[in-house]
Amino acid sequence: MSAWFAQHRAALAAALRRLWSTPLNTLLSLLVIGIALTLPGFGYVALDNLRDLGNSATGVQQISLFMNLDASRKDVGEIENRLRQAATGKWHFVPKEEALKRMQASEGMAEIVASLPRNPLPDAFVIEPTNGEPEALEILRKEIAGWPKVAHVQLDSAWVKRFDAFLRLARLALWMLAAIFAAGLVAVTFNTIRLQVMAQAAEIEVARMIGATDAFIRRPFYYYGALQGALGGLLAAGLVFAALHLLGEPVGNLAALYGSSFALREPGPVEVAALAALGAFLGWIGAQLSVSLSLRKFD
Amino acid sequence: MIVASNLSKRYPGGYEALGDVSFAIEAGQMVFITGHSGAGKTTLVKLVASIERPTAGSLVVNGQNLSALRRSAIPYVRRHLGLIFQDQKLLFDRSALDNVLLPLQIAGMPRREAVRRAQAALDKVGLLAREKARPIALSGGEQQRLAIARAVVNRPTILIADEPTGNLDAESAGDILELFADFNRVGVTVVVATHDQNWIERYRPNVLRLDHGRLVA
Image (tube, rainbow over all chains, first blue to last red; front, side, top):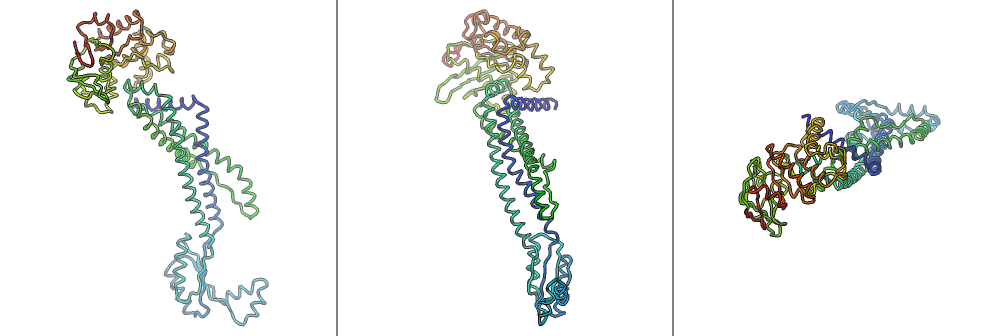
């Protein structure tokens, strides 16, 4: 067990030495990896912030249910029963007389209302569903629209749906972007490791000759790829922080103009660690592919 | 112990480097393989070191049949062999000591003990004073002795050398031969492929003579 640890420590040390011994190459590789991870990383943070913004702006979701003008008290009772059975959340009934009274209370509306021959407003319900998911709201709206004597059901927050669809589209685009850059990262690691293997050809040949296992020969390259990826991930996190820092004040100013106290949320330690881990994982994959292919010629 | 039975090696393209060779080298023997260039000496060394695989016959080294060996088992077989080549295959980017340390690192020995063993091996070949020197700063004879130190540091039971004195003057070659004889005295089986007649005369009858891939003596 201690021999196993010693060999891993030696492989890690060898990988660090190799990274350190060619500072310019290392720096360039890190920049490429860092930038490749920055774009999806920044996109993720931006979407996260947009979602926060969306949630805070939406507040409570409402569905307005308007009855037919000829609906009777009995029809209203029927709807009340159904709402109670559906147990969809809070709701309250707005009788047409009350709606008219409210309208009269609004500035400048009193005269108009007075001139009307009869009350043009229908009885209405305002429903606040417990489940605010856009899909659930849509299902509820369709169901209610099929009830008797219901003239119109209006989702008061159709824009929430649109915003949600936009977020979903953006998330998909982000995933595609991330996949492309991940492939790029693997390719960059593949190439640097291939060059490493070529540079270490003499050592690999000798080590093979004197009884080195495949694992012994591969290990330093795996560590190299993973370390390079992890460092690239940390660099990307640094770039995202820098971008957020630069954007923080203008965003604050803009939000203030709309009377909001919205502030950009920065990635937490878990997200930074995840970015580094992602970089390490992709670097490890690149190293694995590269070493498997490059070492064939030593057989 | 090395036992070959009807051992053959045919390279792709049909060239037969070794044909139907049988011999037995007992543990503790010192044996010379000789013959003209292209007689099959190097091929035989490569077969014993599992660098090449036989195309027919069997080759048993330390009780392991090399023709039936899994690829993953080869490294462990090599750790019991000390291999020495005409071009010493030293690593020029590190010190003499680090070259000798390599087999011990591969075997996973703790650093302190490994350094002690490596220094002992360097001392044995008379290079302890030069442990920090890069191989490029060593003479031809010193480089070959360094290669021997690396080959013996793991305390192999068999030492195999392919033309170890090919590039050396007579005096350095004599030193190398003395070293091999020393290791043989403490029980190591030594197999040397060479065309150096002096050695061959001295060690008759422990000589395997190859001619066009066939064993003639």
